[in-house]
Length: 447
Ligand SMILES: Nc1ncnc2c1ncn2[C@@H]1O[C@H](COP(=O)(O)OP(=O)(O)OP(=O)(O)O)[C@@H](O)[C@H]1O
Image (cartoon, rainbow, N blue to C red):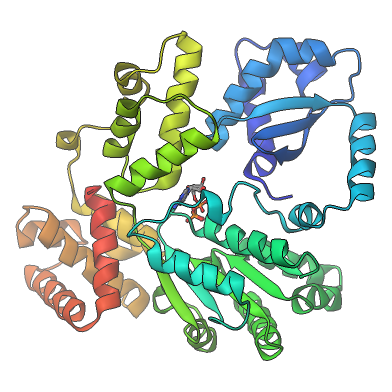
């Protein structure tokens, strides 16, 4: 199952191993063999083979494990230790019981918390939410494919899982497959290596609904694109639903084959923007309510005011405050929140916007190497982001054109003016591009 706690277990263990309060021998004896089995409603089930030591591990190390998990994953989970015999017994019970959605969940790696019920609708995600619901209600009839895009941590995965849960709850027999594009790629590579390409195809082509998260990662991977192209066609022709997410619209995914790009544009493209203040408040209130957290309104307001661009960070902020209050045994107040988040929230005046910073954000967005931007390289996938950096450096900093030119690879100031004018024109011509520039500006200024 691809839950982040399970994926990152190695890192969590490495942190425990390096923890100064835990001796090497204790780590080896009690912690090294722990293995996360699954995550259920915010509780991580951890397997221990040590029947006698289990209580001791629970008493002595639970807290360190919870803190290590929070460090690595950014969320607080409860933990429950189980022996192999208990896990086996449980498995048997579940398979006798036949809860179709749960079985499917396990197979599909869906997070049970990500449903339409827990998704807060705001101005920033109204369209994406409505489109997702339409697709969930009428798979392959409403919009096919549905392409959802938006910045990091804004709810794309949450919406995709919601669609999958909804379809499964309506029809438990429906074959719903959710994967990240990374997993798709890795499985493809493995199938080629093991000579099991046919099996791979069977898996991806004999389903009713395919959801592929973070498709931008197939950019530049020719074989994966080729395989995905055929998967797409087979499913589409058989009137099966395809849902794709990405951090940017199809036309901005560099090195994506044209035939895929155009297919992604066949259905509906819906974006998710960063949430406004009211939506941020509503998301935090909902989270508090769901987890029965007693959070004073001014604490919620403090977090919603100061963390703006990413919902994962917004939730991380609340988690951090709760962890901090538990550790220092103090009540949850605004003062405590300020203290807990002082590393996360930098006062506005400290943030200096430099061409270097702009360059990093733009390079990250276009998935290119920052060094290429200051280089003399001329291919369009580098030259165009370079001009965006010129435009943003001129609009967002007070530096002179020669100075900007100097920083961006010793370029002449007329080159900077040219870049600025080119981008200004494109913004006027193309509203999707204007939107991209706005997203980049928000990322850079944090506003
Ligand atoms: N509208 C919303 N209502 C409630 N919770 C939300 C909403 N949007 C996002 N979240 C929560 O924010 C967190 C991050 O969301 P999610 O993982 O879906 O983001 P993402 O856009 O897929 O990010 P990435 O780009 O990293 O893949 C999740 O815990 C999710 O439940």
